[in-house]
Amino acid sequence: KKTDDVMYAPKDQKATVKIILTDKKGNIQEREAQYIQKGSEMRLFKFTAPASQQGISFLSLPDDVMYLYLPAYEKERRIASHVKNQTFAGTDFSYDDMESKPLSDEYDAELLSSDGDAWKLKLTPKEGTGSDYSRMEMLINKDNNYLRQSDYYDRGGQRVKQLVNRKIEKTDGYWAATEIEMTDLVKGHSTVFKTMDVS
Image (cartoon, rainbow, N blue to C red; front, side, top):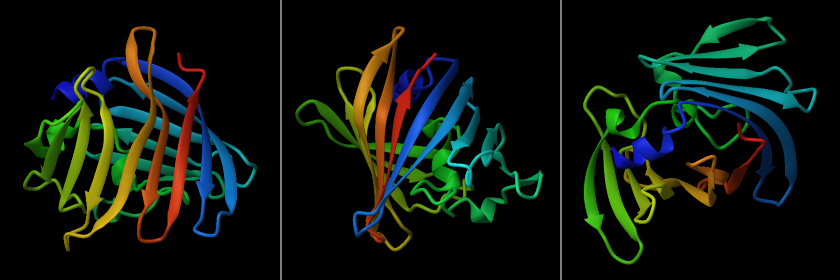
């Protein structure tokens, strides 16, 4: 809950995001997007470049409601709960990962260790949440309660993804991850979000 409080402290936020996709052969693709956060449960993520991705948008609303807008079809579609584990627009983030919702609403937390400068927590999905992960193991910075790293495990107990907040900075009095890397450990593919022009 302390981590949620820190990560959702800025109630309204806008930013430009540079996205770098790297496959297992080292091939790189770059994209850009705009990001708008309203409160702790409303988030809009919209691609602005390249032209092939421009306009593709993801909207996360309260009560587990999510929409995807595809400009080629000129209409939005609601994302069903059973496909939340699918990847979002070729990135290594699933719709579930992109959803704007405090972790304490979805998971029960257990302290595994408190060594060094970080707490290690194990998060297991609350009954009825429908998460595709059997658990998440997180490192939380002791100095600011911000998430440093998260490992994701599938229902078979295999570690399948890892998120690392590579840069955590304080802007206008709020802590924020300005460089995030999500790695698909099965596919050997990674996605980096670099946040700029935060307001």
